[in-house]
Amino acid sequence: PPPSPPPSPPPGPCTWFLLDIVFDKYSPEISWDLFAEPRAKGATALQVGVARGGNGCLPDGTYRLTLTDRESDGLCCEFGNGSFALTVARDYNERPAVNSPPIMHGSDFGRVASIIFTVPYLAPPP
Image 1 (cartoon, rainbow, N blue to C red):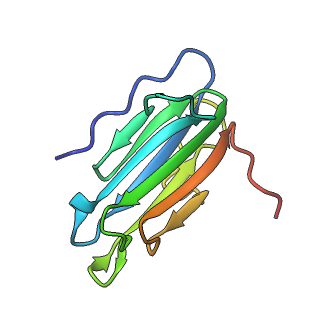
Image 2 (spheres, one colour; image 1 turned 45 degrees about the horizontal axis):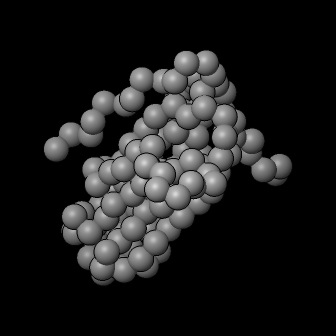
Image 3 (tube, rainbow, N blue to C red; image 1 turned 90 degrees about the vertical axis):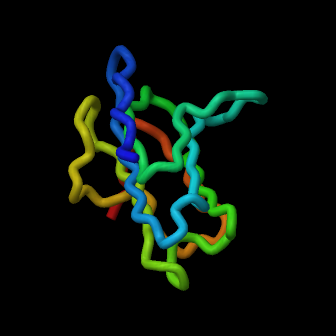
């Protein structure tokens, strides 16, 4: 099924993120979630997906994105050449460009790949 439309941005400044997933041959094995950090007991995910990824606009804060493969073989390589990339916009209320460098990417991650990131996102110095 096509990905769901992005949620409406929250009031005030926010930073857009884009999660792009290219599946291997077993897409139903992959899921992902996004939580605000620190996660309170019983907290609900801000976004959850089994689709090709997601996007949205996040208010300033710290977040954890987790991708999970229930068969623990990641997105590469024995069953196809899948991958994922998380991109975060550089400026408030602007969407990340398709060619923006991701803050996290990969394919061969076993059971779980996770990143904690803060928005507004400040790239590390070169």
